[in-house]
Image (cartoon, rainbow, N blue to C red):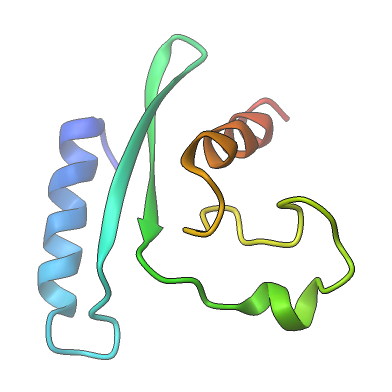
Length: 86
């Protein structure tokens, strides 16, 4: 996706295209600063619950999807920053 304005516009287009389908889910665009620039990620409003069957023995937020809505936004941003720094 393009810059922040482009990302927000593209997200609007995708959510409009998904309206009335099985992909019609509430989402939000979360913006944050990293390495001198703006970044963003899309977060679903609901959890897929994959952590319950795939990662049942993990601690903290490690077993949750990268942008899981159950994880606090600040912790999610920290996780994404760590991935970007790899």
